[in-house]
Image 1: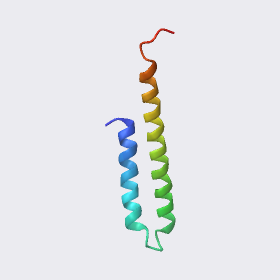
Image 2: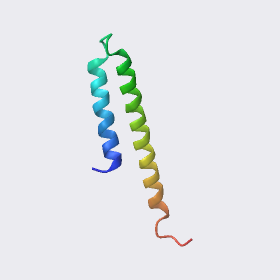
Image 3: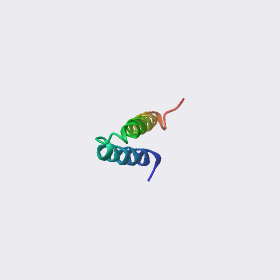
Image 4: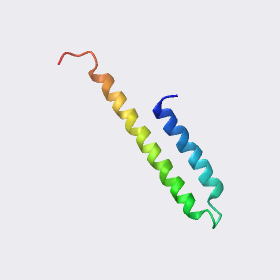
Length: 63
């Protein structure tokens, strides 16, 4: 599992936990922290994908 897949997996796990803890008044702050962390993981994974796709475009061409 590479870094991108790991970030997406962690985001899915966090979103699943968010859905389970959402309606509890005790876990309300924890819910928002997990949700923010899942968003950050998805953004990071998205940035990793864009960099890899662009790197393939210019590989092997003379400078």
